[in-house]
Image (cartoon, rainbow, N blue to C red; front, side, top):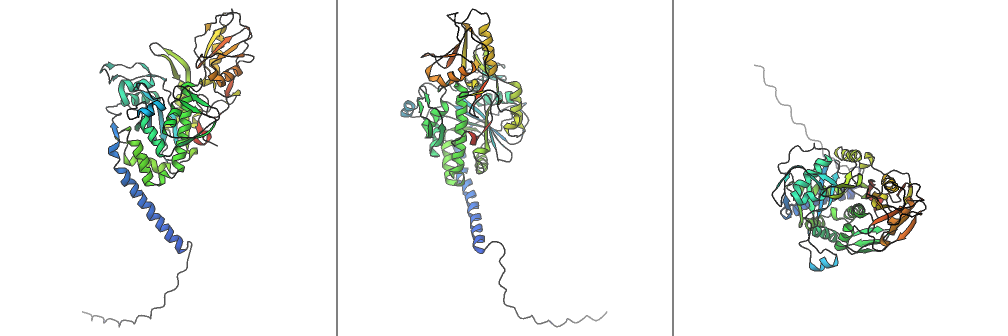
Length: 486
């Protein structure tokens, strides 16, 4: 065997040089320390956020709106929440009932129905209001009150809740929109008031006085910070002018935009403890599906940290027939099938609503109140057969909510067309008179929210008009920053 080579002697280690002073590149040390500290704080805050919210799951009253549901629409991108507001008032005090006009028995129906779409990138919220008087057809179901089996039948959409609760409400909305609902959230009067109060109130602005004897709302023109009870009056009022439920939905959208602005600018979403307080105020009196829990709440909270009013957009489902009369139901609102389909396709495809072409037409004389918000009864004040029907059709084609049932006036010798109106609806009357060149305005106390047109022999045509404000109209899409206080 070859001899084993001997190991070479160990070389002595060189003397250690004094350490070089490190060259500073980029941030100074204080910045590095600050960044590290901030990272630790944010991580801790995230942990605290989950820990303080995690225990709140038990406070949510659970419902199962998706039980045994079959043949549902395909899932799209993003998250769709069906937000319904009910008139539940069990926890309202007697003093609050009197002050905010909350007396009477609840109807156990949905006062408000909205689809809230959170985009897949969590950078946009799209809100579509579904009018409570919308014509709908229910799928087959069991009446939750009587236990009677029902085949599909016509109803107003807000009555689906009374017949079949959250499940029939979700099924009806999905059947009409072909949008798959991912979560269900039900808010009553109590949770609404608590949420507004815990945020310290919400600021809204109005250019005109808002007064409603039914709810007690009484706001002068200008900016107002509304607390819970007054905010409830604001979103419930339907009798401030002739716009009725469509006007109320516009105010609800305006309020939601202001609520987003308040939540995102007040530091609530960056402060885990304040986020917990707001969440607790809401969860104590809401009902939600079983899948809407801690993780979903935190996801929404984190997403909204980057929100601003311009991140939200609002619209109302386009209406094709304003006074669609159904036997046994009376007057309903029938959706425009083409425009509505285009709108709901944008939700399914996670696209901004403006791409659905829902903005109102730009032609026409500008008026204070949109024609889509004005109820009109036409009377033929002449002996010319068919004049009432012609005037009614022309007004309806321009967007006014006519009864589609013109009648004969008591006096058949009217020369100048008259717009009769209750003084409380004077802005609506001026807008209607603008559409009828040369007409006479005549105030009639006690006439109510439906304006009356007595067609005279001078009638020539209906002039096209449109709302001066961007958020008015039948189905205009507006961003939150377009309806907020300037």
